Image (cartoon, rainbow, N blue to C red; front, side, top):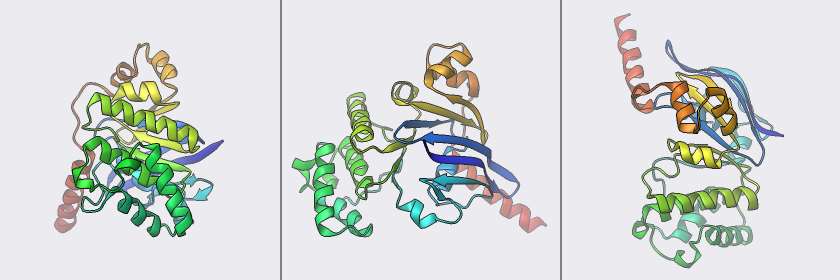
Length: 265
């Protein structure tokens, strides 16, 4: 059963169409990979689905809540791990968890149990009293994953969760992700530039480029459709080999251009 249903979702910045009528579904309890080159529209799509950006057109249901009408309910339905660090380095691991639990309005009994269960899930219970500033990059990522689950969300968005981590730590992170999907019953919506990760972990994949969906299916289906032997080869065959600009940088440049055009008019 779909837990995310996206229909013709579109985002325009002036005359520029960043996301162009994309439609896809994400099945409940599955690991879903949303892939694309830099500037393809991944971040813009995720920002719309997590209520950070207002769609220009189209509709979406997140956990059966309407994206346009039930935004608060949607916010309680998901957790998110951003690509950039978002922990408070001057707090302990436990304090970071507790602060997040308070923000979500969890009562003390529930909050204490969730903190213990989740820190044990990511092997950080013994380090709960340590300051985050003394953690390695991998430990911080694990803590961010645990924190995103404090309110028992149905969906977790992971934006490049293993970027900058060594292969050993990346493997451990993915074991935690698979574990939480099975134990917590959480639907995982992830982006990554490590194609081998998506090839190995994802149940279903959608590839976006220039704001449009250009491929979808299981990793095996995408490889079969493109006549390739790996998801990375399939990805390159669909998107090409050219170097792309970063999406955020592209958006900033376009906004600046739009302002300049506005002044000229």
